[in-house]
Length: 452
Image 1 (cartoon, rainbow, N blue to C red):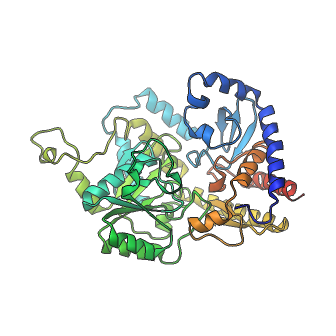
Image 2: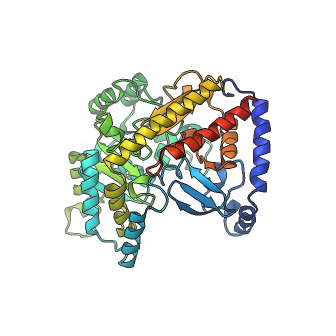
Image 3: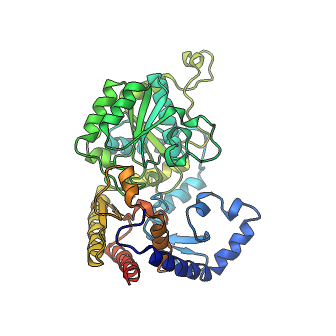
């Protein structure tokens, strides 16, 4: 439904004007796109680079710190940081030097390197699980965690919450994605979807189905910010124990909020935890940690090709990949965890996150809009209505795709890029108050145009 306090005709008029301006000012990207269409569907190497936007894709050229430039030399403050994968910033020198040295000495061996031990030590210190495995993305980490949960519990179903996103994997899709192509016709039969914060529905699902695991973020962040109600995770933990179901916490988008993620801040007791993106400063890496008992199960059920190994007769867990845990990913993760994602850095981004959120709310009030800013330490967001949503149903009551698309292109034309507007802006580890003020100025400009 349209956002409250907004004239939809005004939104459409702004969108058309800004869309035209956007395309006029990016001729080099337009030319490259036409060339690329010969080699890639719609001219992009990943479907999202076209499908997420109503404007034509534009081509990035380089990045530095909190900014990147396109091939037409427009400079953008990145408030979404490539869906948080670049929250450590573009081109941190300490990362660049480590990557150069690692590539020069071999980036992949299909063997462990010592850095992997150092990375696990740092992860264990933060996330309170000391047994870890690596993939190349959080999606793959979630997929393997679910496979382990099914083998461990000998159950089939996966329970997720409305409004979630845990990757384009069969076991967490469904809901608004029911029309997605390429899945088997019955792919949703093992996926249960209930509303976040609804403990009664969760218990009913656990009681009536053989649920292997619940997969959730600590706070839903793909639809603004939806916080757990008081004691939600304490009671969720109790339900998981009662019904012999593993609790998998996906910190991929929330690890940027606090040292040790929200799991540590809120003392969430998980059986497994999954990470990606920022954990290696944008170098492709996924990782998942396990409790002692789950880790021992994994150790006893790893795939083995030795016919004399008792595990060989069991078939082994379907986990692993040629590039998983490669030396380059380990070098990047070690640098990110020791040099960039420090406690002091998190303290700064949290302060700036509060500044960002309060600044947004001040602008909404000044422009007489009944909107609410949201805050989650270094992350912010907003709802286009008078109350904070508790679940996806309440979020969609005030969600406005036309408005979000208009905001995105308006911001882009003024040097601010917010790739996934529905997720809300985030403070990166290389930002200062100057960048937050730049963002708030553009938001103010947009609201001024919107209300006139």
